[in-house]
Image 1 (cartoon, rainbow, N blue to C red):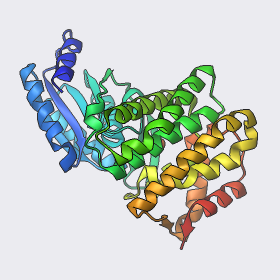
Image 2 (cartoon, rainbow, N blue to C red):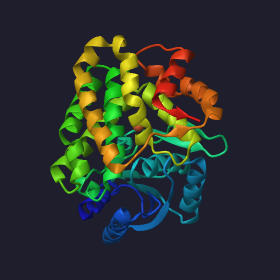
Image 3 (cartoon, rainbow, N blue to C red):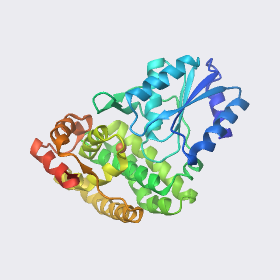
Amino acid sequence: MDTMAKRITTLTADRSVKRLLIVTSEVMEWNRSMISDLKENLIEEGFDSVVFDGVEPNPTTDNIEQGKTLYKAEWCDGIIALGGGSPIDASKVIADETNASLLITIPTTSGTGSEISPWSVITATDSNTKMSMCTRIPDLALLDPQLTITMPPALTLFTGIDAFSHAVEAYASTRSNGFTDGLSLESIQLILKSFSIAVKDGGDINARTDMLEASLLAGAAMMHAGLGLAHAMANTIGGFYHGSVHGWLIAQTLEAVCDFNRNAFPDKYRRIEPIVKDVMNQVGQMFEILGLTRDVLEKAHFNSIVEMSMANINSATNPRAFTREDLEKLLNSCFEWK
Ligand SMILES: [Fe+2]
């Protein structure tokens, strides 16, 4: 963390940044010491800081307003996001809407790749709609696998499957190209090699390094190529059920979407399908060990979820054209409805 603070000093040499808002999630045991370490190291480098730890999983427009209010009330002039995809997504919108001079992202999970992209997924509090927003590109992303070591197994699993799905969906996207394919394929290989090791032995720094790199590569592929129906469905459902876990929703949709899309890009799917099956088998076993069961969704939401999934930005880059009936079948096969 002290090296990171020094790097921040170098970056801010020609900017008048003195007081930073540290945006993070509700402080959990496993990242509490990271926040105090960061604050201390920032003080040593001459920065003052204030912590906003109110970002929820699936960050909301209310969270954004709270962060903006604190930023202005405390006279901050820059932002550091510390944590997983939720605080990083929230920080980009807060930075954009407050014209912050500086935005630095420090991921402590290996999942979203959000640390380098301008995209944020924010839930509108009043309508339960998840919005994909193009906001602020971070000025600097600082990645250190040591910061991911204390991630609990379940979170490692959920974030790892998310990174894997970004690589797989970006690889098959209608906007994929040679550049994004290279990023996706390297990410897929790293995850195949190190995913289950990182879940079972969180202290394995080599596995943690592979997963953090894989997440970054997949995030870069996603930023340029877009995603597909697994994310269109998962992001829509995540808007309806605030406590839902994005990676868990993705785990329930990814294989079915790959089956549905197979004929759209037969050569590509032939190349990655054995790996997708292998990784998803590992994921299934890990879910069993952790005692996770399938989500049960409410039938009353079904039609809205179909319509909103069709309109979701990720549907536009799905490799196979689809009808409303196709989507209904996918939703019925991936989730239980009561
Ligand atoms: Fe995702």
